[in-house]
Image (cartoon, rainbow, N blue to C red; front, side, top):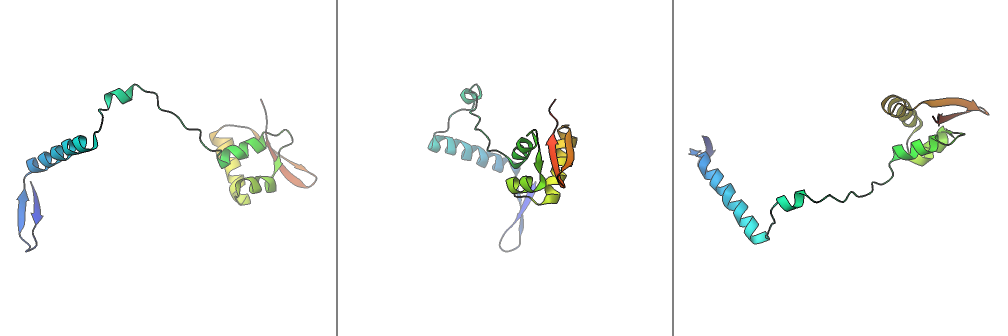
Length: 118
């Protein structure tokens, strides 16, 4: 049993059965007033999946799939991240989690990154 304290500081026991009755009444009241439909007919319908907006990670991967690759400045502008964040995503997410092979090479003194196509 639970106890509730009144305004005067007296603890009174609250039987659990009254809470169950209150919940049942609330559910039946809501379903009658709002006109809620049963769940079973909704289960068989396939939900409409909205297209997710392009994420910064997917934009980064698209830039890296270019045959000549992208330098760090281009990747920073596309995502709005700082250089260490871009390098961290390339190393941690793209290389390790996604298992894509990223090639890093220097062209004209600028570091370029690209995903090696299979």
